[in-house]
Image 1 (cartoon, rainbow, N blue to C red):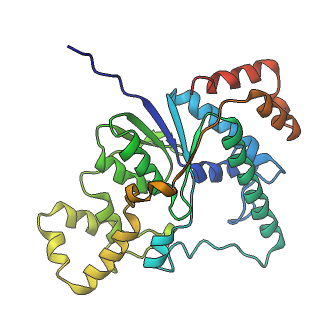
Image 2: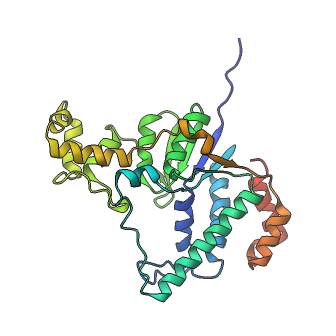
Image 3: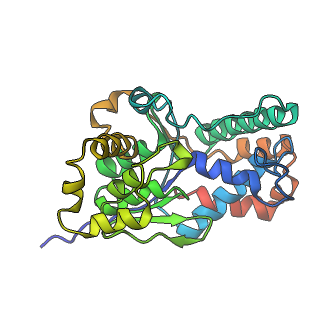
Length: 291
């Protein structure tokens, strides 16, 4: 009798979600709705690599993924207004300067991860991070223990799909999100998603959507209405993750060996003095060395 091979502990970090959160770590106040307090030359980079290390220490995974956003080509084709509400006030030079700094620091973070860290970055030029997370689970770790780190509730659909193996950790509340008894994509298709500029179905709120899904045959009955069906189906297609099996040839996967000498040089050049003591660097290395 052969023993069952133990599953891996897989950590999937919603990459841009973590970088955006690092705009607000360890300093000051939010100056305006368009800027966070982390406005030093490398403040976001500093925050990020502290958060990355503490996150990996917290979950002790065997492997870490960091999927990146590409252009949401299919969703934009279905709805040119998808995420069209995410605009920057270009009339304010201070806001423009802040976001230029943010995107520069984001590039520094991604470059360092791909160059010096044993973290697996995954990228498709025409697909979003969310779809890549599903791809990683479905085609690389379907039987493994997976924790997804994100404040984005869209990942609840992965709990619906893989209730026994996938957990979703909200880094803001520091709690795991519960699974839903209903199909989360159907619920959100009715409710909509303001963050992504998805309107949902007119006149259907959270309670009504929950009632519809809890009542046998209620959704099918609603779908007989042409206006309801068209609105629902459009929103459903925008919210549901895309199966990327046929897109594998365009998915770019990168993983490097841990290079502490390069990491130390980068920290020195960016002035991360608190992370450069011998004890701090030793602890930093121990976090990543077994990935």
